[in-house]
Image (cartoon, rainbow over all chains, first blue to last red; front, side, top):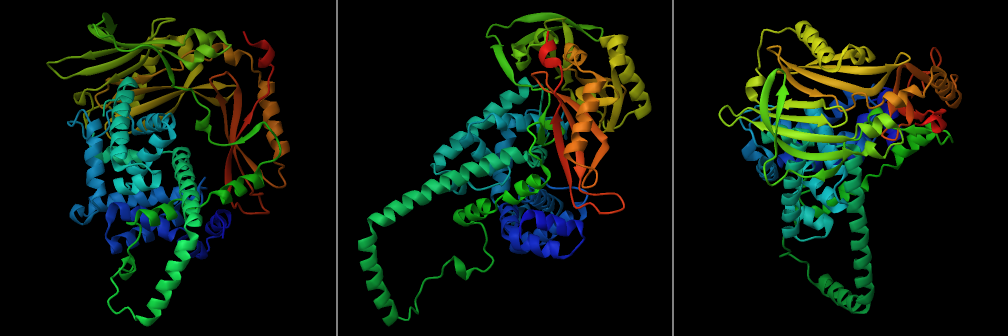
Amino acid sequence: MDDRQIIKLYFDRSERAITATNKKYGKYCFAVANNVLSDKRDCEECVNDTWMTAWNTIPPTVPDVLKLFLAKITRNLAINRLKNDAREKRGSRELPIALHELSDLITDNEDTESTYDQKMLSAAINGFIKNLRPLDCTVFVLRYFYLSSIPSIANSCRISQDNVHKILSRTRQKLKKYLESEGFSI
Amino acid sequence: MKSNNLMEIMGNISDENLMRAEKYVRAQRSRKIFTKIAAVAACLCIVTGTVLGYSIMSKKDTTPDKAPTNDAVPGKPADDPVLFEFVFYSMSNESTNTLKEDVKKADANVKIGNYSDITFDINKNVLSDRPNGEVTKEIELFGTKRKMYLFGKYTTVLSQSSYNSMKKHSEIEEYYFENEETGEREFVKYRLSDNQLIFYNSFSSKKRPAEGNTTIEEAKVIAEKLFASMYGNETASVYRLDSTIETQSLYRFIFTRYLYGYPTNDQIIIFINKNGELYGINAETLNVYDDVVKVIGEKDIKNAINNIKIIYPENKYTVLEDKYKISIDVKGEFYLYTQITDMVEGVKPATFYMEITVSIPIKSQVNKK
C-alpha cells in the first residue's frame, strides 16, 4: 500500500491505517527508537505511541513525506521517554555520547533554554545543513537526527570511523561559528 | 541552553535535508552492491566449487554445535548497521510524489511547496571576517553608548538583484559587545546604506527572567512604540502587528507587511522580555522590498487568484481563500501561496490538503528599476 492510500485511511478514520502503517514503517520506526532507547519493550511502546500520535494528528496534518513524519514523531517520543522516565542507564549508548558531542556547541550553561527563539534556531541550523557537502550533511543527519552509532555511519557512508569523527568535529565547529555569526548564543 | 534542548531542535531537521542524506546513503549502497556483484562474478567459479563441497558436507553433519547468530535474539532490530541501512532507504517517497502529481496540473507556474520555501535568504557573501586587530566603534544603543567590536562585514544575495531597494540594502556590518564584569553580551547588525539597526540580540540570561510584571498587552504597546520610534511612523504604518506569541520567558511580536490586504513574507520581529525590556529585533527585510512592491498591482494578484481557480476547478477542489499569502523571493519575483483540498462542500469530504505556491507573472519584468 502506498503512502497516499495510507493517508486516505487516516482521513477515513479507518483503523486499518494503523495496521498498514505498522506493516510498512514498523521496522523503520523501531530502528529509529532503538537508536535512542535500546530496550526492546520501550521501543515497541514508543512505536505504538507513534501510531497513536499519527492517528491524532492526521487529519488535519497532511505529511509531506510520511516516512520522515513518522521518524520525527518516533525520535521525539523516544527522547522524551528517556528523559521523563529517567532511564538513561537503560538507554542506548549513542544518546549520551551524541549529547556530549553537542555540548561543544554550548557556550552558556546558565541559560536553561535557548537565548533566542527555538524556531529561528531550527531555521538557522537547517540553513547551515543545506549548505554542507552531501557527505558532511549525511554524517551530521545520521548522527544527530537518527542518533546512529559511529560504526553504523561509517558503514552507511563507506568511510572510516576516524573520518566520521573528523567530519563530525569539523562540522560542529563550523556550526558553532555559523550560529555565532548569525547572532545566536546557545 | 542544554545539549538536551539542542538535541530536540535537531529533531526539526527539515525533510529536504533528511531526504538529501537518504539519497546519499542510497547512492553509496548502489556503489557497494555494484562492487560486490563485480567481485562475486570474478570469483564465481571458485565459490561454486566451495559451495557445492560445503553443501555435501553439511548434509552429512546435522550441525549440533552451530554457533548462535543474531537470529537467536528475537526482536534484535537495527543495531546491525546493515539492517538499519536497509530500513533507512527501503522506504521510498514515490507515493508522496504520486499524491502531488494527482493534484498538480501541467502548469509551469505552479509549485507544490511551503510558504517558507520562498523567503528572504540569509546567505552571506563575506567581505571581511572578524579582524585580527580589534576594530571598535562607539555605538549608541537605546540611549546608552558602548564600545563595540567589529565582527565582520558581508553582502547579502540581494546585491545581485535588479531592484534598487534590494541592492542598496545589501551591505551589512556586524558588531559584538561583551561586558566582562557582568557577562552581558550583545550582537547587532547595521545596514551600511542607511546606518539602520536591523538586528539586535541580547545574550544576557538576566534579560530573560522567567517571571515579570509585564503583561502581554503591555508588552504589545511597548513593541509597537519601539517599532515606530526606531523606524519612523511611516515605516511602521506599512507593517501590521498580526502575530503575538508568548514563550516561557519572552513575548514575540511579528509585524507583517501587507499588500492589497494580503500578508507577505516581509516580516519584522521584536522580542520583549517579561520585564517589558527589549530582548531582540530581527528587521533584516526592513524596506528591502520597497521598490519591488511598487511594480505589482492589485489586478496582478487577482489574476493569480483566478489562475489558481482555473487550474483547480471548484467542482473538484476547494481553494482555501483565507490562506492566501504573498511571497517575494530574493530576485524580486512574486508568488502567491495558498492551500487546496479535494473537499467539495456538501458533496465530498476532504481526503487531503495540499500547500501550493503559484508564481505571479506581472509586469515587473519590464518595469524593474
